[in-house]
Length: 305
Image (cartoon, rainbow, N blue to C red):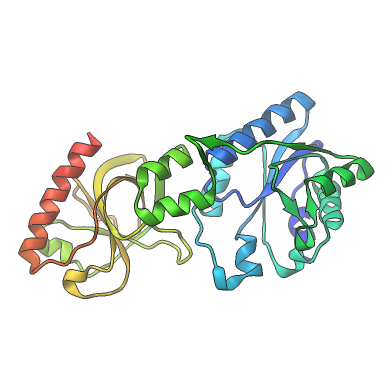
């Protein structure tokens, strides 16, 4: 079984306190639970660990309702380690994993990850058919020798902080709500690839970012952003959409780095989306579009100062 091989590649130096889940986005609700995990692990002299899945279980169990991801596994791992998690265990979720009973799954965690305790949310469940809910896990824990602690979810301004809430905010282009739920700016990143170079003609050369096909994107439009190249940060304007003025149809992410000159093809560019300036519009000609971009740049400068 691939799962056993993946788990066997980790050898914790001491017994662990774990939480299990996708943790897509590592939003404030996740951070709330993970703070409890790291605090309790330190108190109990255990290694604090997170078992996360490379893809959402829903994408395996119900591929017709596939969820776009908020964070790559690499970014998720970086963020988790930044929160003080000592052990990050990324696993592939498969139909084989989905078929395991709750007892089988937690037994594997005990054998390979030396699990002594679990910390979960009140609606958490694992195992075949989600049979391992909190009550079932507590019963298993008494039998198999591990603790189960439940952490209540985080409510912010009357709203439950969740990946679903973040996806809804993105669908509206509401970057302020997205940032509030994440506790940081929403970020897109990828290598800079060649484009149609229309930006050069318009006087605003842009860098096209290639993001993974399953990356969650906000609604099409123009955004005030911060562009990151290595350790340098630039004010920027980012267009997400199909460029209707030119009738090209393919969705792209184009970034104009303000006050920047240079060739960055092939380099990794990350953008943090600060605020949506406007929706994508079709203009009568390139001159009208160029004039609007000038206004977008000035508005972005004002927001980003």
